Image (cartoon, rainbow over the protein chains, first blue to last red):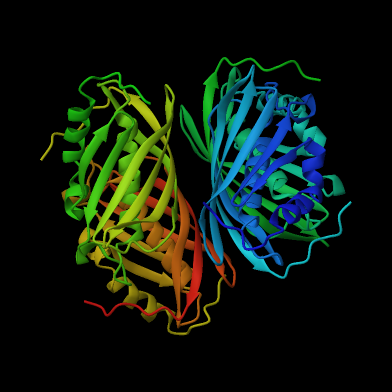
Length: 150
Length: 150
Length: 150
Length: 150
């Protein structure tokens, strides 16, 4: 549905994700990168839980935010960066499962602003249960340099 | 302004925070707990950064969410738990500084739903710069047991 | 996909909508009522415009809010009422057209809280252009009496 | 706290408000315009109610949105326009009273994006009760012409 203007968007997005040390810290990976769509996967680990033993809602927000932000990034020019302006997240159910999958996608691509959404699912015993829904606004910034990677 | 119904709210909230392994993972502490108000502090560490070298926006969201959720928790009955229904976060500036301070407070306390807000500041060279603003809805749940702590 | 527990949900929802004088004032109708889904239609009139001559963003918000709130209402018990807890609306494009169509639907139905969404389209020269996207939280209240209708 | 760059901001904002026919339709006025702050007042009328006899939540959203959007507009250059990118509104209590007062203010002024907030109060028997809280993102657009007024 969306068409990328940068033919090398997937490599660019993967390289940027690899420089996010916070994603490494929580154990998240980004196995799917398509034009206007990414997925972040996060296996359960005790280190990322809240007081009830489920994955922390803030961690759910982190992967929702990033999956949709990178979905936006797949559609920008190669020299542009994206910034999260704001997002709104509904937690639908506890993040209870062996793996969280955040599916970020672009709803509307504009020159300056990009509206995106993300759904987060908890995979438990082979069933994908919805656990969060996010609506987000992203701004494209031209010419911002990234920090050197690890 | 707010009056706690549980005289031991501060101990209860600190004990719950201590069971959030995700907060330990990112290095957050909760040095301030008052009726209707908490603060979460988070020192800069490379492990929690994004690709530009600032603290990750998702991590900013984590401490905003938790500071306001715990602010709600200070006002509930001792046997109740709180759940984040949803929140909306505007990122105002990069989280650039030596320390992040999330100030969570209760806007309106209701029997079932509690509306809260959080402001996050980045402390840099002795100056407190606003970096995020959040508005949140919390639900009170009665009788939910917490997992045993670490 | 959703199943209504009240067999007379459509009559009940239409009767409630008919008591919303604010909808009458702006000229909105609700031609579609299904289990978990409603549509509100709003023809262009100069009286509902903003300073650029498009339909006012606040009016777009009104029909988005109501279409999704009534979508929630289709799934409740007959004696229950629904209240909007909160909503978040992105305006995607000016509301420029002969007719606005707000499509409200239920994302997740819970006992106390119902998460919904709405998309608003502007119909112009036979084309349906997206103009707003909303994510909303609804609370079910049991036994609240409605005011007598007009 | 905020300083306007356009010395004639108040006249400009009042003239734009006067061109919003939707505000005229619901009976709203804008008696207060300061740098970074406006108030919209809305007297109770049966025509703007919902099914319980209170002022419609969508109408509450309209005046919240507009008060904060015009607060942003007070700080822009004279030739600029502002657009609502998105807003998130919590309804805190029914809009029950003789008069609604929406207080819109600028939280953070940026070159492209302006973050604002609004509080809406219902005045009843001389008491100002909070009924809604909004957080909003506004975009500044340069050179957009307005439609001729009524």
